[in-house]
Length: 306
Image (cartoon, rainbow, N blue to C red; front, side, top):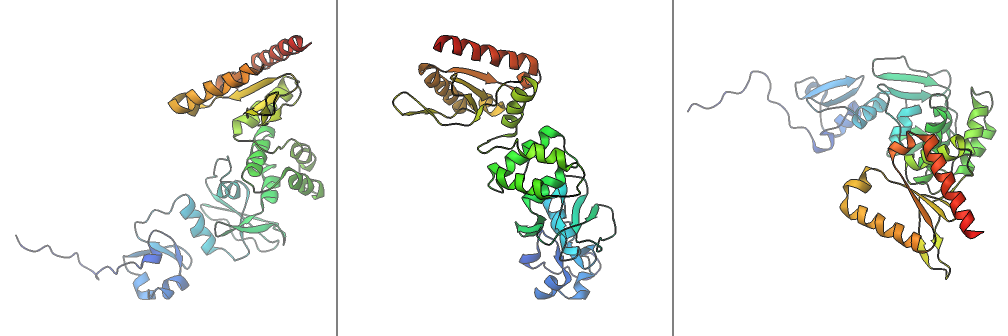
């Protein structure tokens, strides 16, 4: 069998390990001994001005974000939903990378890039290697685009991830001036809580309070028996009435071990006089029925303890 012929053109240059699978600047390429002549060959492709990548390497998702940040001024920061997604918060990443720069330096809009201006000197921090608006500034920016429930969901998730505290979000909203919708943001900041484990817990809590006009339940409280022993940590609880509310996501149904643990957990609470309400996504879709069910449980428990 005759030997295979090489395709015409220069022999491809091996890509240095630090440059594989990621975008890089012209300076970073030179630091790895990649010459401008090599960058013009078929091994590499220019993705932005002075930003290159290995040809055929997918630049999507987080890689696309990093590539854009290499091409932008050093004082640019990720903004809005892009910033929230970079923090790992429950938002839908936008189709274009959203960035913000200080006043008067906004870059031109290009396909895949949504630039804004108005970044203050204390409004950005480094997170996972990139400049991004602080959690507090990010939450305020999201108040311009998210609905009430989704905004509280993001705030609860920020607190749950240790990015901020309810107090800091309230302080930031109260200190903000001349921002569209700031009165609404100040009100919603006061609904953000510690110890929330999932977006659905937030939605459940807000449904009970806003739709059902019920008292606000405690969030993930540690419950004790009459002797001070720990008996459980339900998602939500009306401690005085001894009513616990558990949100059951799909993982509770599909994971056999989790399902058995949930049953045992609920039995311990019932043995100690608690009534346990298990809630699914279908229940959240019928808020009136759900709130009526919780109200009946509260009434039953109060009559028993009377």
